[in-house]
Length: 62
Image 1: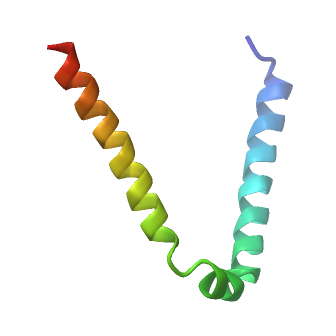
Image 2 (image 1 turned 180 degrees about the vertical axis):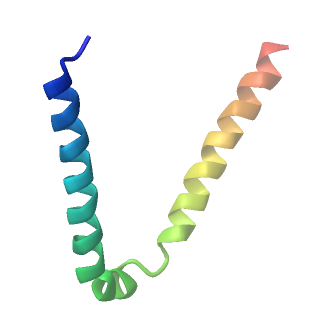
């Protein structure tokens, strides 16, 4: 399916990408705390909306 060289490249790319993302996140951590304070409320609302859709689907399936 994939050659050995492609797999090695994918693993190296993934490791480098994760390392760069960690450094970038740490660099911007102070800004995240200022500008994204109530972000968890949006996440909870979105997850609640998805849960309601599943409940509606199950209710009308019966």
